[in-house]
Amino acid sequence: MYKTTAVFIGMLIAIMLFFNGSLNLFLDSFASGVLIHTVGLIAVIGILLWRREERRINSKIPKYLMTGGLYGVFLVIFNNYSYIKIGATLTLTLGLFGQMIFSSIVDHYGLFGMKEVKMNPQKMIGFGIVSAGVLMMTLA
Image 1: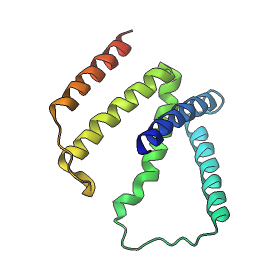
Image 2: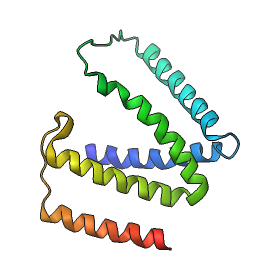
Image 3: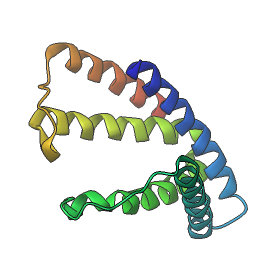
Image 4: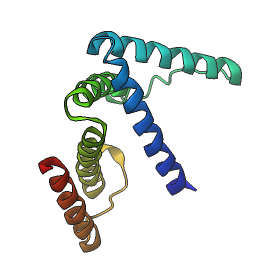
């Protein structure tokens, strides 16, 4: 179930990249970022109202965890810029490659309170294959 959901998320990210990058053809990166996040905020508020659940911010949440939205802003702006310059496929490929590298470091060392999932030979082979594919795509 979770693996299927992850594949679905990947498809949604590709669709989002296309729409956001295409919007950037009509607006500059910052204006499109504002519009994209405003629509997202409206969507989240709508979902919260529809679910009719009371939400409170827990004061014990580590402050660094609240910076995810900040990273999201930079993600959208840089994705939009890259989409215009290098296209959707290479933007998504290099973005996923960066995610793979960073998430492997997080897993291996158990950063941010995550459970340690050590690197193993099978993962290293997978890294090599993916790296070769990324290299082939960037040189094409």
